Image (cartoon, rainbow, N blue to C red; front, top):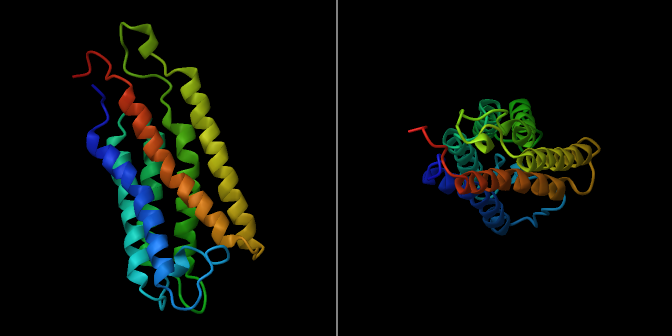
Length: 207
């Protein structure tokens, strides 16, 4: 039996649904020819955007899903879970401080930066160095491939976030596209982590 509860699977699966479903519905509701390649996700929830409540709910749901998943992903190391929770909390904060029509909100921008950074780095710190002691030697340390996969995932996420950062600060033409690639990848990694964790049996003697 897995140590990770079933509800963590629901929250992890809900994250990409809230994010991608939110921006899909919100884009369709815009009346001014919204360009998802050039314009950001936050623009869909900005003050004055058409039906901004759609993306607001999407982002709030995303943040709450990350917070819930961090609570349930008990097989991950505390540092990784903490960063996942921080990413979720920062997402909720940026929802509370939406973009303004005439320019960005500083609080929103800082919260978005924290969210993107924390959600990119957390997989690298999520694999515990030592699990609960067990008579079975294979349970004392996580398999090396798991650690390599986690580090690779973090590197890919950081690469996508970095690409978005370059587009954002240089006012590139792919700001929206790169943000969506980074955000979607970050929303999907916790689901993969929960799926992998639930396939591993709960160590004996842990209750």
